[in-house]
Amino acid sequence: MLSSVDRLLFVRRVPIFKELRDDFIVRLTSVMHELQFPANHTIFRQGEEGRSLYIIVSGRVRVHIGDKQLAEVDQGKYFGEMAVFDTQPRSASVTTMEPCEFLELTQEQLYDAIEETPEIAVNIIRELSRLIRHLNDNVNMSTSSSR
Image (cartoon, rainbow, N blue to C red; front, side, top):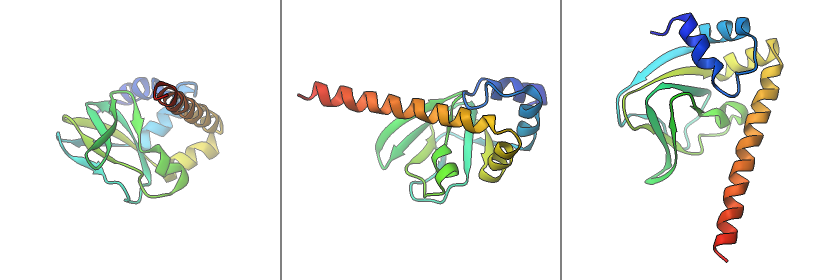
């Protein structure tokens, strides 16, 4: 179990939360659920309904579609955010690679947080834009190297 100070210090390092006030993060983290899973546990499967994002406190997960691995995500990073924002089915599966601990933030908790502190929406937009730019760079590099 993480203390409230540990939660604050941990969540403060997550990009979408790093510029928010401590008092807001303390309130937000107080409603997050702590979850633990063993190695090789499927957190969610492609196509399932998703209403939570997960922040990795410890451990590492793989994001995959079937046997094709898309990414590895480790401590201090998050996953599952797409389904929280667009309410579409999960676009990939996520499986633990080792024993993991997470903080879970539900869609309802996130929307309440955005309503209370709109700056979080700007941070989320900034972080998602950074991710899209990174994916665009990867596509451009793949396209230019295959010519």
